[in-house]
Length: 335
Image (cartoon, rainbow, N blue to C red; front, side, top):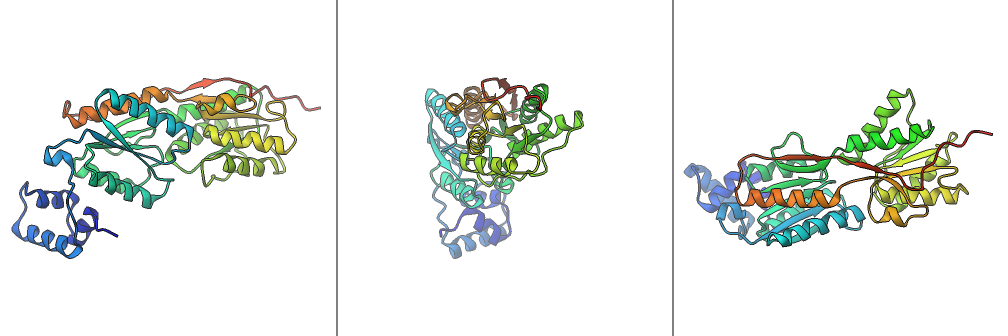
């Protein structure tokens, strides 16, 4: 495996920025530190052929996009929006899908740097905070989309995931449901949506379903699997809030496997409002994310940073919107 700039910094006991300065012969670095870094570079046979373009002053008009799952319609639609807007601005996109694996996150960040991209956009699902810190320390252009890093000074475009979870659960409560299950993954966006769900239950003095467990993957199969777990419990829910449309589609499948009708016996609500929501049977009530706006906003912020058009970072939080279709209905009275 080829050595990375992170390996050099760790072995030399210095920051990433210091390694960059040594390689590019910039900044004030003591001769002792310079020699130590150069010695480590030689020992590791590190090839610093593509340092951050912001340091070299050269631009490739390419931007990296790191997403967790290209098979998820939400991320596919988001990537398309970013790519379309990037094309309008004269930039090409290099898309990397990590499958939510930390080792792929690190691998693709290094790959994108070797490709001399002008900046990197990180989408929801990216959890390696240390890598983000390193990018910021190097002053490498980085933007976040569909999630937030509140403690980091980066450009970010997200929606109010807490509000989305709150509105979805509030709607189910208004329909009379008091036993509401949730299907979520242990990632930032889903945790925020779950926090909204729990807040509504607290306000109405309701309890979360005792059979809850995080899904391991954000796909239809895991939605079906966990929904089956909920429906097989001693007190099956009358409604399920799934934290994305794929998981919701799986919940609908599970209901049919149990001989239940949706929404007659079980109401299901999703999140994202992707194209999938319109082709499920029945069509899915879901929380809509303004995917097109998110994509355009984040690429605009990225290009602005690449061009050094402003000195401050921007955080844009867009509002979700509940879209009611046919997968939810008022709770049927007990016979």
